[in-house]
Image 1 (cartoon, rainbow, N blue to C red):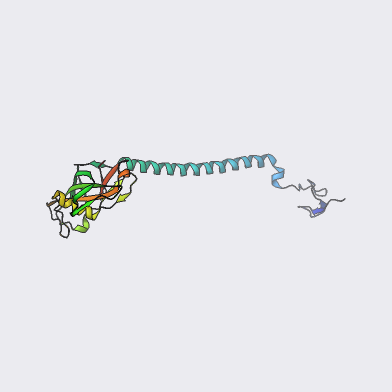
Image 2 (cartoon, rainbow, N blue to C red; image 1 turned 90 degrees about the vertical axis):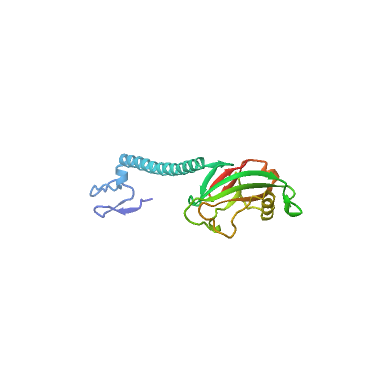
Length: 219
């Protein structure tokens, strides 16, 4: 069976397909890669090396970025200031000077027959007392007061129990906080809050009172 014919790359004469040179003009019919097999092999190795380095570099850079972010987060967490009961700190742009003066765990707050409250089944009351002083030159309105929450070590926030807080305020007879009025410069008030949470969960791990951005460890 005769081989298929193709045209010579130089003289266009019909030649057998697959021959290395044209029998008429002597033109080499192979492409550049076939004529330079060694150089083609070396170029391939170099290309593979370049691609490998590029991919490795990208992976290293990504890993470095992730590691850097983790290190920054860990550093930030390790540098977080946690206060103790009795410590004084500032909040709301240093306008307010605050101190959590007392924490106690209770089953009943106030007189159950008059504005008092007994804890729900399976729960416990975390009751706190704190002072807040305006150390700025301007009045501070109630809407500018920092939020105050009970927080577990996972960061879950709990709001205060309004009824229990009212009963505790009556029981302690120390709450003179401003509700609708501004807190004027150099004026200090004392306030109370009560939080109802699971007794079992409260017995485990660390717990805090978060006032604005600051944390006070209570247990």
